[in-house]
Length: 183
Image (tube, rainbow, N blue to C red; front, side):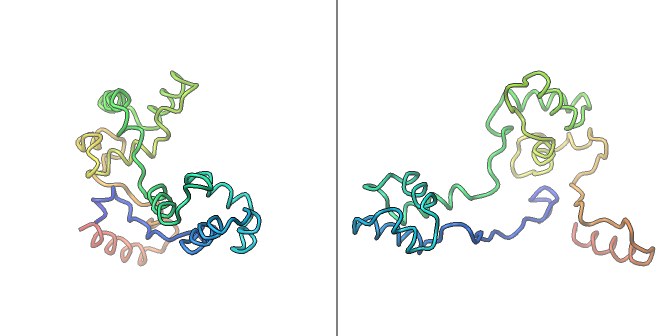
């Protein structure tokens, strides 16, 4: 499972409390059908008027707003992971592959790209390059290039799963459990 997700276990998706629920969207739709103002709809669902106004304008306006379509659109927009810049931009991907083959680190590549093109955020961050290398299912950057990185690891190491600050007896237990998770 870890190899499939690039070495980091995915977090279970949960809806944030401040997001509109399907019930809120249905109340907005019914309020618009009855001819209620945005402020009165906002008061009835306990949200700020700006939130209701933004929701309506994002999803077709007063005449075309439908709760089901708005909910589907919100789910699509919230889906993760988003496609990275390396997946979409072939020229950028080829440049990153060439620099990785000459043993540049992802941090150096991002710094170089920002220096060459300061007006555009072409690559994002070094993390996006690491994710593109280690997430094999994306097939953005060849997997063999992980050997060119400083660590040469075939899978990412989770920052939370460290043995720093532990006693020697605890380290042995941690290492054994991390090995069993990798297999």
